[in-house]
Image 1: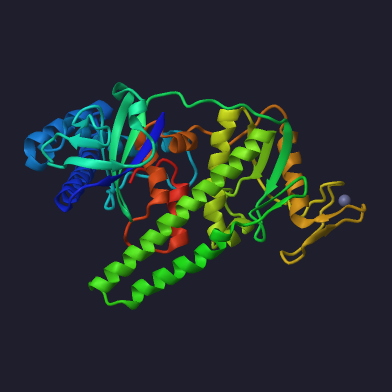
Image 2: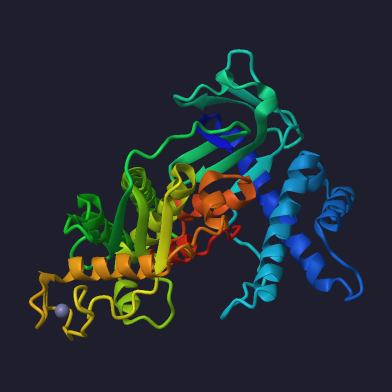
Length: 421
Ligand SMILES: [Zn+2]
């Protein structure tokens, strides 16, 4: 599945109509969740039951009836995906929060399937034909949707972002496969100083934009609270903040994608530390940093390219990897400020390089059973195998216009794999 994105250009009343459709989607989704919650125990609520419920809602509410019927179904499917995930977590006995479905307040998209829209013969416009009266809007972008047969377009989504409205097409075609060019083995250690250090002694610098990002975002955020509540200036400051955030997440995605692709292309095995291990001191320290968000995103792209390029990607528990000697296995205690690993056996390495070698060794010790994090969920989130799943990606990219703590906010969304909002 390939997703093509265009910027939408329309008139003010058309944007309002899109907002209206987005609101209706949220209404249907939340109603469906409520329907599931209130259903008597003996009634089994599944995807089909929720689909039928969307038909009932159409009879009851005029504004629901105005939205294309398949778009209504897509909205109940979002509810189902939240419920299904919750069931899945319970079944697999996932530790901690099971993710009981909650009501959504910040939906930013509406999804059409194969009806309710038509592409204009000029190939640069799309017409929405349901009674939400969005009408015909221009599509700005470089991808030519018309190089693909209209029949292969499975979903059309309208998304509100900080800098305007976007139209995404999910096209059902096989993405061209690439092949791996090398058979290396690499361990990666995420540090505070560098984006990562690898087992060959290379240190990947933190990209400039990430270093600048934290400062810029914090500044923009402070500006919001300086303005009076409910006033226009505050609204403007909030917009500025959201735009900055959007820009940085786009850069972050590009950066992660590029690095991950390069690594998977050149290596048969890539081992990295799993920062989602609970109770980790390192994680705790990193949680404060914007790096944490970037690293999580990077790991997801690693898994994505691993599948595409046939690379084995292994997430290992990083416990003790910085303290252990990668040569003789002795524990050499060091504080965070100690930058060099010096062991009695004569081994002397930069601290993160030593850790990266340990990480690689741990992965290799696991032998033929790579327990990668590539569950397919993360992969489909990036790929957009289903657009419902893809909503999570969108959230990473486009925060709501509401100002919130950047790192926590972005982190929640990044980690909330497949969470529909
Ligand atoms: Zn040693």
